[in-house]
Image 1 (cartoon, one colour):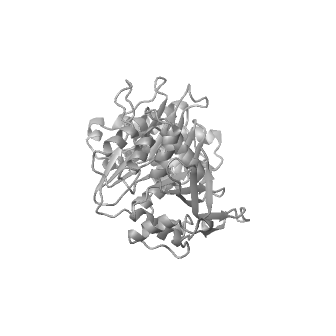
Image 2: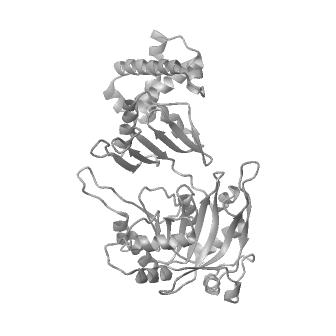
Image 3: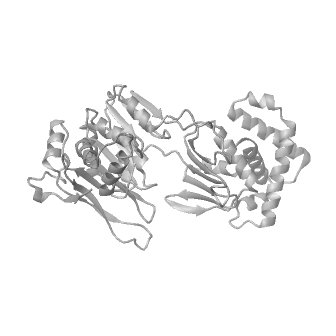
Length: 447
């Protein structure tokens, strides 16, 4: 079996895999013997790769083995990826269709494409090779991973989010997860993906421009950051926007954007700057809008206070499975602050601060949709009162393996309609305005 066939075979043989790994190891060693490391370090990354490929091509021409043009190119690519890049992961990082890479020890490499998991016919030669790849990744962000620091969560310079956990915490070997930097979609582009429709775009655009405080809610992998980025893109260009994230992913195009990113503690356990620290500091920076990538702790209380004290139009995401769950999660997270505050007072904060919840769901076929747009219509310390203004009614999964359904629209509460009207924002006719509570689709949730 040729080298290319071994690389692309869906069921590579043990013998073929070992021969391939041997060739890569042999020519990587020969390459390192011939290059001048001082000269290489002075080159730009792209020039460095070109130089290595040229030198390796000379070595193969001089010493063999006899390979076809395609096999020769494959071998050069693999060896240079091992020497310079991330080995077998390098082609995956260049594949735009791959949204997530999951390495479960040296023998399993999964990717996510189109919302579905796929086991790839590739593997690392050993735990040691996988650990070398992991160490190369974390070193680019000045982090280290070892028994004393067995977990790392960071953002690569190219934007990907990386998570590492190694033995003794992982019993299946070193685990590496790389989430690709999501491309910035507009709301109109998301219509083409089936995530929402034109009427919902009109409503959400009006809510953002009219400075409603919006929480994007959803489980892991539902597209919260993608939607948050799209909503942020609707903020008028003349406003001062401060974004706060654990790993900077938002890609706002406005002219006045301040991007803040939290910082974990160093190896001595010092120097941590949390999301909460950044939220507090942002309030002293004269923001027109505050956009928080995800609230997950005590910073929720600071965010709610900011929303209810003059920083209208703020946006954030929260990990929750429904609009009701989002409210309860916010209440729990806000209680994690070191400030001792009763649940009733937190409920008051949520009711006064939060206007709209946009719920995202990832369906069984991997598609991601807005499944509800809900308005928080309660006041003070009342039990939470949610008014659903749009819902996606999903049908059972069809014969083609897809989830289909329809978006359903309901009337807006009068106070929401009045705020939109006062800001000059039109109300799409499919929603309408409720003349009484009887026309509202209301759900009440006690804490």
